[in-house]
Image 1 (cartoon, rainbow, N blue to C red):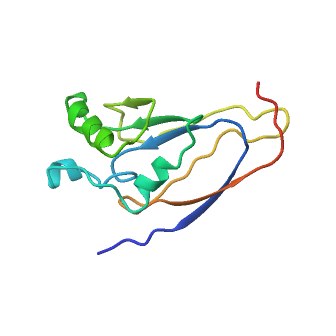
Image 2: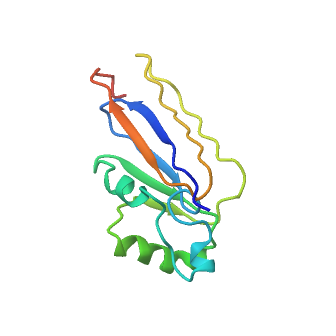
Length: 134
């Protein structure tokens, strides 16, 4: 059964961004490394990751045990995926992002949920406004 990927649209400022991304079921097949013996990207995920601007920070979260670090990071290196940090042993429950909005009105917290093992189809509109950086 193939799950349909839904187009999600977000609007971002021209400032640098921090991407906080779940690994299993979001970027790669959930538990694929256990079930198939290796990871595999979900539809659009590899292109999405490679499209993140170099000035942005990429943080990957996973409930995988620390013992999977070599296998996980080897897979990402083989595919040329850039990231700044991977956190292992993250709890299975909700992930909560809390951030303050800028006085200019820029909303600085965006949260997107998606169905497990569906691809990533994200359309990003860049705002042309200038927002204060600090």
